[in-house]
Image 1 (cartoon, rainbow, N blue to C red):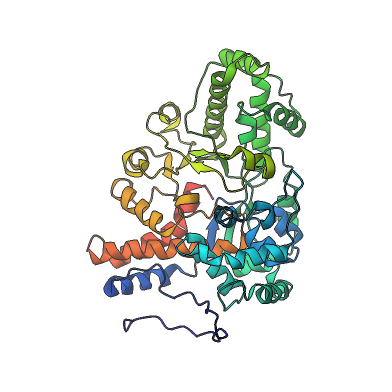
Image 2: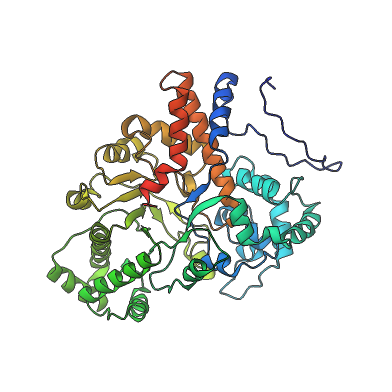
Length: 487
């Protein structure tokens, strides 16, 4: 250990035969002592900055109702597909992890879910999830032992008692996490009552904003699309039995979201390609698709047309268009049929952006009100396509590594790939993209450590000075997400 290692208070040792849980203070920082010393200084300059979370999946009802968390399984395991997918890969059925089974198989009780998680704890070694969970357990929940089969019940009881404390309620945690802004992800038909409850609550001072997520209303390839349009018509008060009506209904709901604090829309289309058909042609296509006369290609074209309409709407109402594309959703049909979406089997695919985004950027690439944040799961396009696009178009920001790429080494590869072409200030800042509420500070901390290490390397190479590096790091955690998402 080098002489400059940061000292921390040591927790009580774990009982004999068990391993201590004590995340190292220098985790994820560079191994070279000289560079590590710079990285420590940079990291210390931002470690306590407020967290800005411009994209995530926390349920606003959690903060509006402020219920106590009941157990560690429903908090840390069942809702987190980062966790359940890897346990499933290692032989644990999803119903044994608390996910409801549409075929009626019994769903495990929380204690059994926790036992399965602890028994398979070693399978998380080397993963980003392991680092996040260790930080949650140690920093948030006070755990000082590595989970294992032998201590699963003991840890479960300890955590149930801990979660019953007032300091562990969602609102108290929100404050202790030092969250400045939290964006949720919401269906256009949502009445946003939980957001209004928070805004009207005199005892609540946090900022929680909705995000407009219209995927189900734009995906004309889905068998659920006709029913989705009925729901949208009911919510908007606009009939959706025509293309013009559907577009107007989406505009009405966007206005509702903006009135309740939304600054962005979010789109998870299979690819970023958009169409911009004349309205008469789009109207004809809409009826052909709805009546079953268009075929799969026609349905895909209509979906791309509706995505293009949302780009047009963003150029008019100023809501940032976040594009999370490049995933093959619900890859395993049997799992989808039994457990539904967002259960861990969405798989990245190769994605092309230069040609796909050109029709949108021809129209809105220099538009004063339009802005887009482009995310990808395909690392091969970072330097070849996305960095050059963001390095020219003032409306394009590069989304930080997301989902499968929001891991330390992938974050480093991202900075190496895009910075020399687009710089630091054309990126979005980190997004946690999580349903696991207690993982928010751990995920942001990971990004701060990785970026501090990257910048420290540039300082050591005399590419930039340490003062400049500190300014960049602060901007990545404050200015960049505020600019990219108009917060």
